[in-house]
Length: 114
Length: 91
Length: 249
Image (tube, rainbow over all chains, first blue to last red):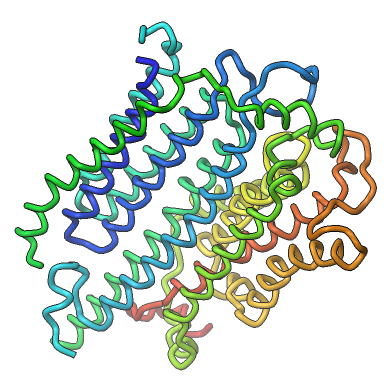
């Protein structure tokens, strides 16, 4: 059971990929992509956890108390905010596809001849 | 590999997140899926707090409460606006 | 590839990926059994060396400052991509008049209170980012959310200054480029790129961390304006029936 956190991260990744492959709507595809991205955050933070460790903020706590890894937290927090812009780019592509072909179904976009 | 290496609070947090992900994927309407994604984001915030990570928790709170609904709802509104305009043109 | 073929291929592909992930996970140390020395070294050293009590911010803007610069350029590139795809200058003038104002008074009153409170909370998160949990990225999203709330509770005329591309585009460049300029200033003064130049203060106060506050505010401006730009590009007032009072505006 000490590998449960990593198993949860792998499960979320697989669920997200299954959602992307079976989606019928490009906007729904973008949201399933956010689920897949969240699996990487769970994995990063689980790898950096130290047993009985505190948060790596030293206001009021003495220097030298055991704290969790700060590097993975730095990676995760910038990644979360940047993913908003990336999802917006994917949604903009979906809007363009809808404007040109009249549908947001990824299976039927290619049917329209240009 | 005993169960004692995971504090019960952490086990519950991981279980909620593992339960929330299929729920988000299985919702088919994009508008409703945006709402379920927001709730999944709150469960992720609880998980990050339990894992002693306040900065990623703040990021996820702001993004799942403000960032994702903003872009998703704007895209859905624009798609519906186009479809409504096209229906009006046909009539 | 038709949908049925794709779904048939999905099952074995997911199984293969799952097996690969399981094999990778089996090689990891157990949960909580953190071995690597880098985390412990940073937790001991960042506060005495850089005088910031938030070690994560110290790592973000000082120890691994170049990674954050890369992330900011991902944000910038995504915003440029959205702008190229969606900005259409010919149609924006005429469609702008015909919006419907949000009518419920209670919602508007609560929303107006939330705009001010949200902006204050966002600015506080940014300003004290390297002392307590927070930072430019988180506070930037909150502040941008408070400004976008103004679109919901106010008229389209109230929100027009925040949609103005001639203001938002240079501000985004200032935020992203300011980060690079601070790094180049270190290069000019003879040390390596993004070395912490200015004097450190006392940890726990606002005046600490050297060049970390400057980088913090630059990234906060970049993130806030990026979200405002994204919303402005997605915004398109489609045609709804004209209300009599809106016709005079």
